[in-house]
Amino acid sequence: MAEKGWESQEFADTWKKKAAERRTLMHAQTEAMFDAAGVRPGSRVLELGTGTGDTALLAGERVGAQGSVLATDFSPSMVQAAKDVLREAGTANVTVRQMDGSAIDVEPGTFDAVIARQVLMFLDRARAFAGILRALKGGGRLSAVVWGPINQNPFHGLAIAEGRKRGGWNPDDPPQVVRAFAINEEGAWTTWLAQAGFVDVTENVVRGERRFASPEAAFEAMRESPIHADPIERLGEREKEEAWVELRRVCEEYGGVFPTVHLVLSARKAE
Image (cartoon, rainbow, N blue to C red; front, side, top):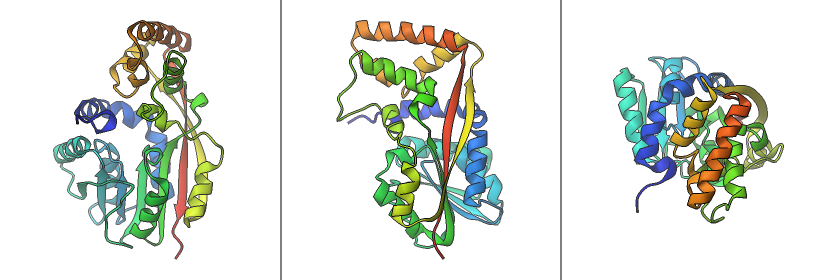
């Protein structure tokens, strides 16, 4: 079966091309995650869901020559892309491995920090949290970035809404962008982390914006992203055309600038 969504070569290629844009867009969230996880010179860091390696590259810069980063991803296409990016950058302190974040397979008690940017939403939470606790040293920290409420992230939310109201999708096979925004209950993440056995659990809101050069550039970005376009591309031809017309109008309405809300989660393994 051909890979689809985040696991596909198509998305890995698109994701790699957008690395510079993503670095700007996610700068505040990523720095907050690193700070909350205590990523510093000499740290040994495990990253879940590295994608094409841009977060791993930044983490490698933070930990320096005396530290190390093990960057992991479930998708073979993403893993290969990350290896290419890190090799091109000449990064020597980051290793990339294929690994399911819901089935963490590392030596127990060996990491100072675990980081996960935009990936926890896709994992089996109970298994992932148990695996993170096993991987961390006593006192080690987890920090993760997840999406905030869908109604506060219109660049994604409006496309999902258009797809849903014009026919939707098989509930057993939702678009991955829908899964990314499936958790909207206030306090859900902190409750789950505390129940899993973490201590010092916090959740901080980071507000930002997704700014495009023009409304047309925003619309083209929607159409070009295979993940973002998925809720629309699943529709019939007539509904698809109507949805894209409406989304072009929405991009004009927002002037190509969309607010974003992320949550930065932080938690610690007891000593």
